[in-house]
Image: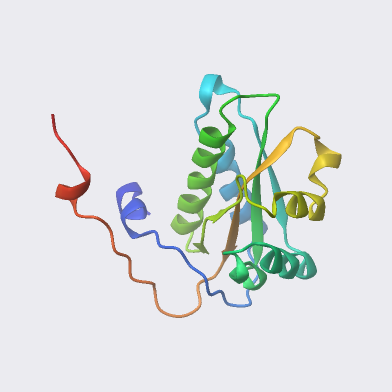
Amino acid sequence: MDAIKCLKTRRSVRRYKKEALGMKDLKDILECAILAPSADNRQPWEFFVVRDRERLTRLGEICTYGKHIKDAACCIIVTGDESRSKRIVEDCSAATENILLAAHALGYGTCWVAGWNKGYESEVMELINAKEVNPNLRLLSLVPVGVREGAEATRTARSFEEAVHFL
């Protein structure tokens, strides 16, 4: 898919078909996340891919605005290592956006679920055993990925004139 078309047509998807995500596609999506820009090229991200149905269901219960996670083929959890960078919010947000766009370009639906400074951070991190991998990790976002079910969602955006200011 053309990059401009990808950017203009991506939508948040909260309904998924019960279809698996191919490992090649999943790897492509994650490689795009790893290639995101980061401050001083610190690359502080670590990604946890949840495919286990019980954990997906639990994530859907834990996350305030992530009930739909339970129906996705998988959920990519984006974490940042605070010992690698002071800019994990910016860096991991760029990686999250790359996940959203790569998945869309491959024909999958996604939805950015906030994780930074949310009351459920410790519960999510415990569920995925993140602190055992690296005790310096913080939760940034959760991205359910799957095949969209139903019609494409409509999207409203602020007008160009309202959002852009030429000086």
